[in-house]
Length: 337
Image (cartoon, rainbow, N blue to C red; front, side, top):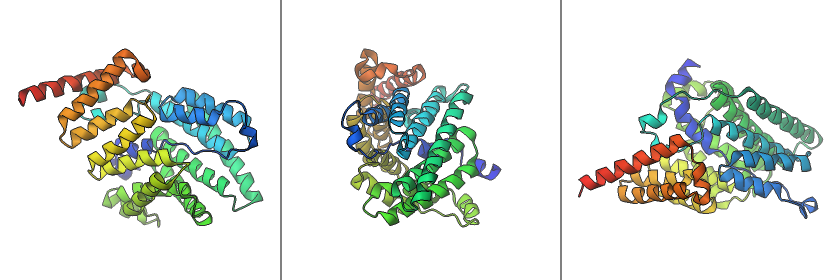
């Protein structure tokens, strides 16, 4: 445990965990011919980072179709990210160098929220097991189980700080993900869990990779990146979360303008998520394009001040960091004249 904490901090690893925040579309049949499409509504809320509204929609989706394991995947993920957002763990890299933004006491996990997340995970896994007992090749149940393991790993890492338990669940999710890929090669979305796990393991420091490899558990950053890219370009159900991950791959591989391109596309598709344009600005700064970054930061501030696209719901701590960044860039660019 101590070795993992020292070699790979929770903050650094959390970038990847938080990135895996996408949803998968459930099967649509005759039962969905009428009434509100809670899945589509919840999906829109989720990718716009409106987690409470997403949870409400996903809960209604589960109530309407309680035998669909995908409903539990969506609800568990919504509940988890609602809590992570409250804990300040779903944010932006734009102000990682801002000491004031990163200072202060962090909230503690809320017991009721944790209980709801874990209960939903248990219910979803139990349903998947029942379906797999009836048909061991039920690829929808296998895919949902893979995602449930990934969500549990996220929870264990981000909330419980149980790092080796998270690695174990990630390993289980990856195995199931590859099994889905073997059963349905055309279903590329099913490989995203494997791609994420491969990339995370392959990106760990050498000493930690060697330690984990003693148990026979290895990862390939190259393979993981290829799988993530494939789902981002060819996928349908998991395309949006794959795009978010692809942006993070570009960022980690020091390709900020490629990352900016993906974040910009996400911002266009989900205009109420103010973190996407902030990431675009951060990538322009990383590429040395400070004027372009300043223009984007100013536009985000304008929308926050006017309430356009609900940007006025931006937390005060983030708004203060945005104001400092604009002021600092304006000062620096004035000096350069």
